[in-house]
Image (cartoon, rainbow, N blue to C red):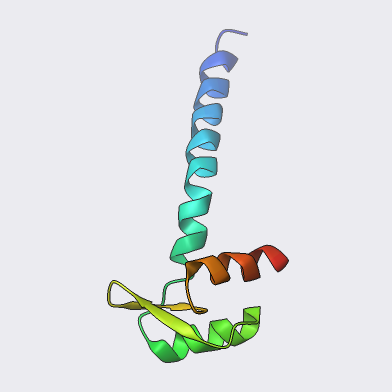
Length: 73
């Protein structure tokens, strides 16, 4: 029984790390190296434009519109 507790604690720790990284991972998938790729994704989610963010490209006019469209999915 005592050997199970460390495994449960480890499993819980991994779960916490994964859950905490999901929003960042989702956002990371919305950043593209080219405007063309961002335009393709924008069309998929219902946006008509893209915007630049730190030298990379993101779908939609801005991040607010991007998140609104993603919530509709």
